[in-house]
Length: 241
Length: 358
Image 1 (cartoon, rainbow over the protein chains, first blue to last red):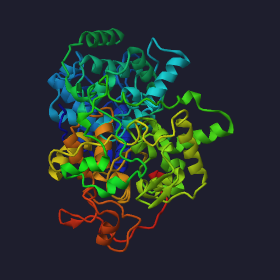
Image 2: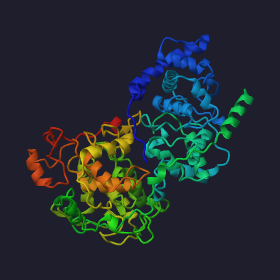
Image 3: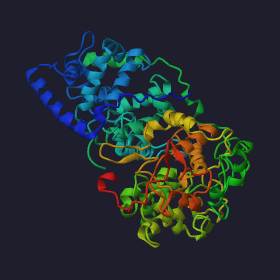
Image 4: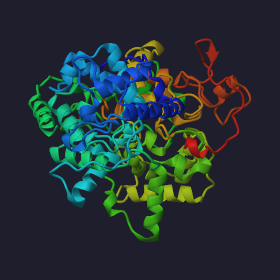
């Protein structure tokens, strides 16, 4: 029942050195674009930038909801895209386009983008620097030290009696993300994180590689989902452990 | 703008269309059989060295156990045979002793950073002993603690718990053994002692080690193992077995072979041991999801790759094989894809990891 994994196209941006160079480069392009209100279409990144800032065909500009720096709108649950892996984002856009990831807003947008567009805009956001966290408000219904302790424990230690690994066993210490398949969690919108875990529980988001996230999410209560989301939303995306 | 956002939000909320996701079928096998599979008895690793687990009839001799599938726990739940529970971390002592126990826990979880002078690869104690050494059937520390001193054929002597820990550093961490009484060993021993609070002094304590598997129905096979690896292991450990690190270098997924992995002297280099570990513990979150055959195949595959030289290297590969690996349970000295495993010359001198590699 497992999904065979394809190993094609590890993005260049997974290489830290390359990623850093790209970030600097893109920062420069971004500054130009913002300053002159122009979009550049001379390179792959420029195409991605154009889609992000002005849209493409029927697809509106990504930045309308995901912010000019890819920072998202945390309280609305619109995720931060800056710094997520290109392959990961492209897979999500593909899933929106073919309907396997269910979202009324993103499905038509992804369908309006070509394969090339999806790749370009994914590369664009992957190369943007992660905004410093924490900036996001907590989910509404958790608060207090008890919920915080629940979130921290599940994130860093898991609950092995229930064969539930810690989030950071795969997403890395501090939720900083690992490789192309385990995205950054730190500083992400709490509403978005909670929404995704809930979607995995409900089956409205594809289970992802090896079905791991569906398995994990279904072991969490709604309160635990919120506690974990709050825990990661408050962590800084950047910085050493 | 705000109304647009609200509309978008509303649309998202209405979009919960259920899609059946059946991938979890293999995740938690309630009926999965675990058992008191103490293969080690008084000589913990003797059987592993002498047995031929790749030939079906030998594995019972190897583990001294009936096959896994012939044993059923009374209520049919995995782990039900394990009575002992280590104390919760919230009850860890305070004061000077508590500080040392806590340090032991910290070394256990992040060994390359907490004991950098003795670690030569990306592995941590917790890589092979899940949940900070607490988890039954994952070679928990509370069970190890009550099992030593013991005679080991590996050392041909009675080994104390600290000496056993030394072996982990030398082989599994491809590092250097801390001297007996070194603060790192004292801390780890204190942590294990505390985890074992209330446990009987019994090397047959249920939950110890990894649940030994029945012999494979078919001889373990490299090509089948590669398929298992690609489907179930490579996502985390990488196509090349090198593991994966965060962008700032923290090794989240340990290397399974290659220069950053355990060396040829480690227990995990035994196919039977690796198969048992994999079956009960891998992939994380999906224990017992592989068949026994898949576990055997992928264990053979993992251990058919090159890794750092056995520190006991005698000067030539076949001599070393004869002395330390004279069993079908080890691929050391065998030829795979035209290359003899272990033919990498003398062990490289130990060098502690650079800060960025830890």
